[in-house]
Length: 248
Image (tube, rainbow, N blue to C red):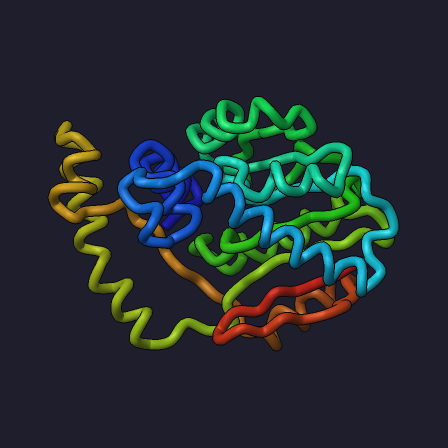
């Protein structure tokens, strides 16, 4: 799956069921979501992450932050509690459009579409904090994941903090399940091209856009971080997922 194919899947999900695509909790499925409750999950997550950041002692400044893979701004808006300006970046223009509409009450947020495999839209050493959760795991190629980590590191200020999550491993049963679901994704694409209503395909026929899961083993990611001169401050390991806290 190319990055552009991945982008189309997220464009479709942004139209069909954005909250559930971002946070796969059944209470949010089929657009049956309470906006306040949805955003509260983001506030709780950010409070927890930044409590750890204070204990670690990074970042040294709290001015500009980036929410990479922001969706409709669930985490972006919560970061404004701690930072003067927060950028939300996503490859889906539809997600960004919805983020702007849903966050008009938070002027410190700036939302930008970026569907490139890099962050050249930002200069070197620009952000005090970069945060990315449940995002890199949906990129099909490990080389693109690593390139994002490399370029995000470039945009991080000296003594800034880069926090990102990525699975260390995907169990075989889950990989087989993904394989089983792919025919439904292919049928979704086929019927969509034939003009069948996407909402009908998703809600009535049980078909869905092709969202994949990827991983990089922890030891490989640690070696990669060392190769680009990033210092690991802390690791959070939960089941098969790792959250990396890194700096220059």
